[in-house]
Length: 350
Image (tube, rainbow, N blue to C red; front, side, top):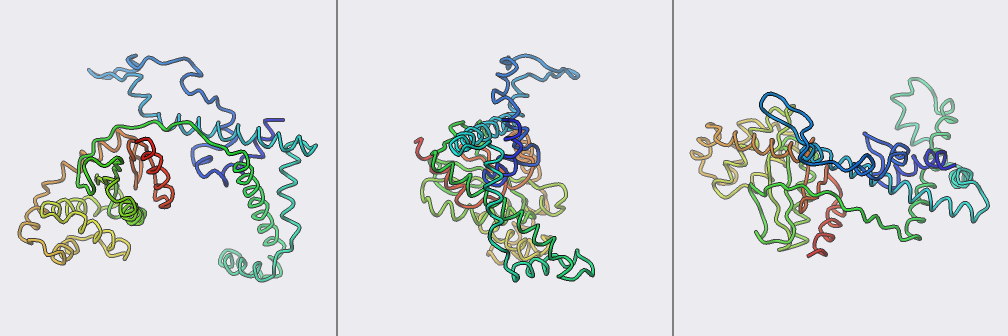
């Protein structure tokens, strides 16, 4: 019974828990995995040498650091799936039903209300480029089925959220923390209780969005956050590394964050980050152009950017933007509320 319920929960888990199902795993596989990580197969010795190559060696401790966030994600997924399974089993038993039938009934309840014609036509117009020469009437049954399925998913998701609130579900598993040096241009007090280290790429549109979120977060928590920037230009963004150099050259004249914002504004406006654009931005900021040009053309900060990338890779950064909030890893341009929740948790610890 539990295995089939877990399968039924996979869809609900993905929709209602955000991080429950991602590209690497699913709710069903998570629930099937033991939540014990290395404990499930025996404790590991961090000093154990697991590989040698040339005159170098790799220890179990180094491997464990590399997979720490994946182990945490698997444990979290297993915990969430198990909690939901037990809650639904309890509700189903009270209703005198099997868990799968109970969930199916919730999903099917969404079919009761007829789908408005204007909603179907709106979906038809949205999908029209992929429908060829098919008319609205020809595709109407398919559109109705698609919208019914969306309604079913939403019904299950809403029920799951309500059930979690009713049971006051709290996941107490703590994320593994990663030590990352707070080296780089920064804003906020040195002794702030929360330090956020961001790895970013000036040609990344998601980084541009996240930069705005970070500014709001810092402003909303005045004096409580120190924000540190580290460069992580992705290889397929050909101008990103030079853009990082431009920002660091501006930093020499005390204008890092101003250049930081201007570069992201250019990215959002789809203005190529060329050498000419760097000069225009520097001039608009009133920088000493001779000093700026000499700095940028010399490539003096190239090695520093390479070091930032190396540090990021060692910490588990695979894409941008990436954040370490008091050592807690957060990936992607999340909503402001997500970051505030973590900041509040860290402040509560202080």
